[in-house]
Image (cartoon, rainbow, N blue to C red; front, side, top):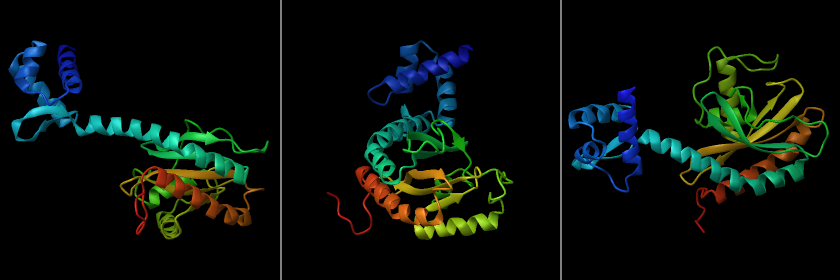
Length: 250
């Protein structure tokens, strides 16, 4: 435990420093022998928790720390800026609207606006669902933002696509059309359409879905709602700094 405590103390010193800090300074500030501090710093570097700042060898927060911080800021920013689009989609469709992020264990739902009907699709906040059988999951898979799915793909209903070749054909359609559809694939009687949300660097950072029971989400109704969903996800993407090809920044 002494080694863990010492490593944690060194990491905290690097995180709290306003500028990159040298190994000798760290050792002096913590009272840890320089040789011991060097070994601990090497272990922290291997895990990506700290990194050297150029040739001078001074230490700063590493990529693993920055990824965690970036994800937290991204999630708060996306949720805040998505609210007008989620509300507009709920008003236009009457159905349940969800904002989702790609997570290690599945699609993670981080914001929801309920529909106006008594018969809906339930509460999704905090739930993780598989990629291959959901509309938002297919969006992430088609655009390269999901971890590798489990193999073999789990079957949730008779309509769940578990054949990799068949799934890849569906994903190709998603790439062509910019929207994904899932009907009876996660749960029988539930249908959803999903579309991507792009960030300022042009990568997919989230997805938005409209979901409801199949008695209302018929093929015709899905066709009506698809352009509405695409318009709102494009508007949200612009609020997040994304510019489509040929579009000038404001």
